[in-house]
Image (cartoon, rainbow, N blue to C red; front, side):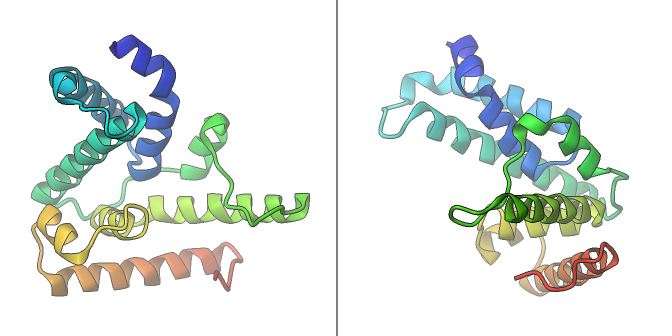
Length: 180
């Protein structure tokens, strides 16, 4: 069962984890934890959703566990990660942010913007990265993020404000001034 899941969904699960975590060891750990949890609970899987949706749900919870663990450690320093180079090496996992039926110039521009944003997110202090990722990529509510990170709403708002300011500054330094 797990071998089939790995073959059928491994790339998609890896890409999802990589878009939310910037540490290869953490990515591999959450993927392993996801498959173990899925094997332990496969008898309770009712088939109301696809296997991939079910596995992604388990993966999301495992990623939130990483965020909780980081928050308990109060790791406020950014890891020295060059996200652009990592994504370039793992090109098959990249997805360009594109408009409907864009031309080659627009695709190249969007891809460049995507890499710039991911690079800047990777340079944020860890707490800002986690909070920003949960808000903007996972669309979690303020209450849920505060519960996961064990912080107050006011603290979350400050962290998100600082993350946005730092992202804006980083993108400006890369020559990207107006991002809609």
